[in-house]
Length: 359
Ligand SMILES: Nc1ncnc2c1ncn2[C@@H]1O[C@H](COP(=O)(O)OP(=O)(O)O)[C@@H](O)[C@H]1O
Ligand SMILES: [Mg+2]
Image (cartoon, rainbow, N blue to C red; front, side, top):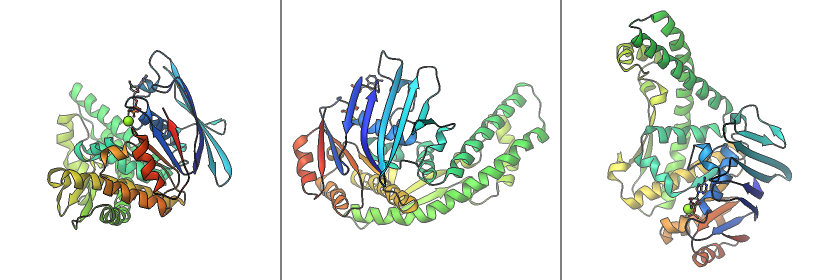
């Protein structure tokens, strides 16, 4: 998959901007605040129908304007794919593939696989479980459409069940048969989601270990564990056992919407016990594993978006990544950096075509 052409209209700090990209390495260079990250984000937006950095779509519109358009032309096996994401204030976002509007944005996910490596990834370690669930779901959904649909349906049921719990509390009433209608649907969908996540971790864990070993110089080993209420209890029992708690909280306190991923280094949580360097290596390994997994599953090489990579990584780790470029592990790459020279030195070491885009 190659992004050949990108045009932006009122996206973040750009009024109008066009790019023709190299099929291999693209270096986006400019001072801080020029919009390097915003360009990578626009490319991300074309793949995932949303921004990686600011999920509030209205805030992606250039200040003072009331719409944005992102237009991408791709080449996939010599076939052209045109993707247009457009958003006007107070309207629904539309995504078009070859001039046809998608009924549901979720239908687009997976068409243009992409992986972003950014300093913001540290949230995966420092933030709460929701960030890690989103990562987990994002990787699975790239190659599993039914999963995304089940997930959306599950969240809808949880929201309805929560509304019912609130209604019970407010009106001082309770009706177990109306609750069980929601429980049934939650159990069915939740069990499926749990099974898919569990299977995924079994495949993904070893890929992560392998990339961590390649990128780090240490001998420590990392592990990815799947934490879920459903690991040791079936969903029905779990819901029944927690009904009093749910009624008091007016909220569904157990289920796969509470799942988490545990990141461990030599058997200890990496958040508490990993050094800065180990955490950085872990995050890159996680993203490289995501890249590898999607590439294996979909037989399409994802676009790789490397934000501020030279700023945040030591030379040794950059060299490891560059080596992967030379080994043809990657396809098309977009690199952002503030310094032309160090970027050029790094990409020259790779025997591939490259282009600079100055902002
Ligand atoms: N909706 C928006 N409208 C106008 N400018 C925006 C919007 N969102 C972000 N920006 C601007 O984009 C700039 C940052 O761009 P960014 O891509 O992060 O820069 P870089 O990566 O080159 O340092 C900031 O100056 C910020 O104010
Ligand atoms: Mg930036």
